[in-house]
Length: 240
Image (cartoon, rainbow, N blue to C red; front, side, top):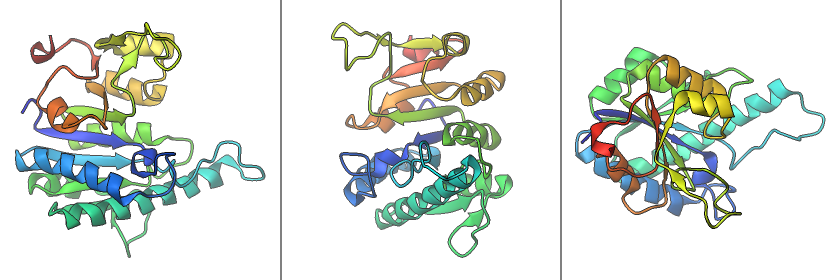
């Protein structure tokens, strides 16, 4: 495997129905089966989960941003609980950690404890983002990846990478196989929020954007196969 320890960023919509709403157990089952393959090969896996399938704060009338963001954090804990249950039903030992104190259902996030879980082969699900309003779960994913010493941040999406133009609107859109961090920042490309990209750049953490729905996608990207879009300083030899 090309990577020993990975941080997988999942959107809340990845757990939802075809419209990206609610929690669809069959979708969680599909994710569990993909993750199980790389765990069996000795890869240490951390997961940051979003909450967009349960709560979208933008545009909510009469709610201040801070309150809305905390509601979203609670949504990620709900998703984390569901994902943990499905994972363990598929034989994957997991630990759910939360940046908010909610000890009846999740461990508090403690970096050293998270790393120890990973070393023991447990999948660690990080919920509640950073525990602070005004930060997205993209930023939380970059932060947790850096804290646990992940080799790569894997951003699972519904498209197979970053394109030079919107592939839904342009038939001639071409997938970009490699992007330097600075290009994303300079052109403000919507790969992840700019705080997350800056964290990755400043800490030399590579990022791969890929399509989670492709068969064996998680296994392929962890093996270093040239799928998706690689974001970093230099393209690694296995992807050249």
